[in-house]
Image (cartoon, rainbow, N blue to C red):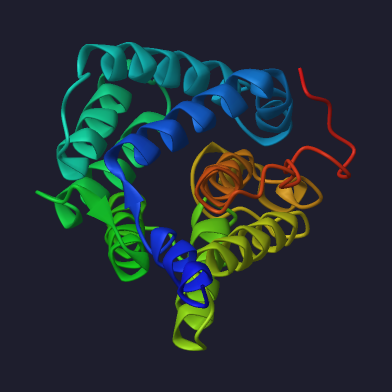
Length: 239
C-alpha cells in the first residue's frame, strides 16, 4: 500500500492536452470576470482597452477550442490560441499575447502532455518571444515584470526538488509580486511611456493579466482552486 501515494504523485507530474484546455478556458473566464478592472488599470496609463481587447480575444479562443475538439497536440493547441489572439485582439496585447502562445506552442510541438520541465521550457520560449517582439526588459513596467519572475520561481522550485504543483504555486506567487512591483515603476514601453514620471503609482495592466495566466495554471493544474485573484486585496474591483 505504500506505493499508492507515489502513484498519485506521479499522476501530477504532467498535464494532459485536456488539462491545458481547462487552463486556457479558466484564463478566458478570469479575463471575462476582470475585464472592467483590467480596463480600469489601462485607463490610468494606456488606451483604456486592455480588458475589453483581451476579453474579445479569449472569447474567440474559446470558440476555437470548441472547434478543435478531438485534437491532442498541445503545441498545435497553443499555436491556435496565439494565432486567434493576434487576429482578434487590438492594441499591443494581441501581438504580445499572440507571440507568447505561438512560441509556447512551438516549444511544445507534438506533445500530448507537459511535464514540469516541458512547461518551464514552453514558458521560457514564450517569454523570450515577448521580449523580442516588445523589446521590453525587466523594470520597463510591462507583462515581462510578472512573467519573468514567474518563470524564475518555477525553475528555482523545480531545481530545488519541489513538486510540480508547488512549483506552479511559487510561480504564480512570484508573478503576483512582480505585478505589484510595477506600481512604483516609470513605464519605458508602450503608450504608458508617454506619461513619463506620471506613469508611476499605477499597476501595469499587462503584468496583471499575465499574473492571471500563471495563477490559473496553478489553480487548474495544481488543484489550488483557492488561488487568490490578482484583483483581490489590491483595491481593485472584479467588473
